[in-house]
Length: 550
Image (tube, rainbow, N blue to C red):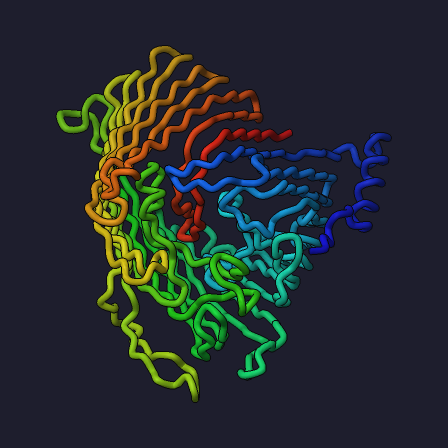
């Protein structure tokens, strides 16, 4: 594949050179600054039949990123170099190669800001449009084109854009066009400026154009989506709601049906005097929205549908049965209550934090239509009814307590219900229930020396059976750390797969630089961020990670 970004664009070069030259004179651009960051992840691979880790011909693979940004008053410009030589296992192998897929120039005069080149953007909560980067998932959906932001009067912010979405080292086929308006009523109306209640309303529209490419179907070449939103806050109370609707968009993902799509996201929270509550509701119906109607998986997504489930950080909870949003249809809800027990007989000397969280996801209540030879609507659905098939359940309780200036601990229990058929697309497997327990203890021996340990267990009689995990992390502040952790699939019904996945790592932190090297086994599994997931194959080998900024 030809890389169209291998050279710095002429316009950006012409901008950078004069700025650099004039900066040396000290006049008139004394404020010129250059900064950036660097990251490289390197991994070696060796075959390990016991964990089904394949032999990798290259033996050593790496992902490298480097950003260089120049700012001078109202102007800024930047480039990002990327090299996948070749990409790490688990990342899409079409990233293979190197080049400059991200470059931009921006003029920002306050009320007017113009960007040419690549940019990230989000309208509202992202239901109809979100261009973003999630490096751990191999996602970069930046738009290459033009973006204009305008604030004509105080309280009104307008954004317009057009361009094409990044697709590895190339671009997706669709042309993207969009506009967003956000109005802060308190800023716009002077007599509301000092009001305790703050109200913001917004609306957005996004469209894509992709030439029809199916000889058997009459496909819409222009597909549009619109959304409206409102945000209300008063003290510790916050309410957000957004509704989105999209015109018919037949695609591989929805089996080329002509049904319109819609999505609703409502969240509210309240916090006061150590008590907090967060609740959310989401309904998604045929809202898989991409810049290529033939794409599948996590590729070419134009929008973002957040998962209303707890984003766990503990290893077994985050990596064995995490939930992935189902854009073709789901209805979900989440409720979390937190409370700080003050110091006393129950809270102890320093107080105790308790969090209780519950989330549930079900299918939509639908009626299939036998119309694939006629109108191709696919099904009908009742907006206010919930389907009877559970996709996911997560009930968890977490308790955090400090016992002294040196000792603190965290404990968590979680119960999961996981529909593997739906979340992973494994037909005929069914639903898995599991229970998780975690104990996390940290002790500071002195200002420089501290030790943290974790014990985790996930209990289930299905799938791969039960797991245990243990972690020990030593920190010598402020520069050094060493970690060892093990995952043990002791409950696997196949005795030959009751395997330890042991990993060791040491690292150094100095200023903005972090270096870590490690060695061990990586089990096959799923990595998820915000309800978007990718599969990671099993591996055995050494790793090195370096990050730095200036």
